[in-house]
Image 1: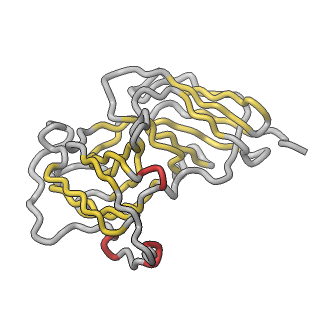
Image 2 (image 1 turned 90 degrees about the horizontal axis):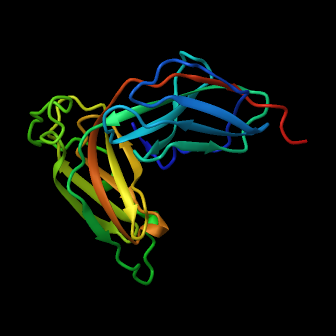
Length: 238
């Protein structure tokens, strides 16, 4: 599993205005509002212990498979989902996640040389993998987040648009690894890639605004999900 930049919603979905009133979880009490027949806003309160972030997800069935819409910074309390499929029912949930990040790595990408075509690179260096001979993970993320954070992170510029990250996997029980990025001048961190457990090498193709950016690697696990918000879109625009 390697996702994120491609995971953000394309066209989507939903609602009517009815939400569960279950008690708040560490994810926060989730509510939804239909702003127009095909535009909605989801909101929540920040409660419980500090989190590394939250993820907002949707499904077509209350017990179905959920799809990630966005990984959210801890301070965010709303998400707008616009231009949705009319007359369609969807379920939303919010999940907190926990875990410590590695030290930050600042990278400035080189200017392309005349004739460079980075888009034609095979990108074999970018494939997520567990490097052979890597030290065995020794710490429980749930028991000691700081001791199980990734260390020995190395950012190697591979092309004028690509960086390969390697790190030491110190966690024994992570749900995922994430590559987090913050472009120069940006206010918040974003999640650029979501990786399977035990991965310790991955290549990221940078965005135009990431000519200079800061990166970090996070091992994390999910907490209990919020209440479900059950909504249906209206007829839509004629």
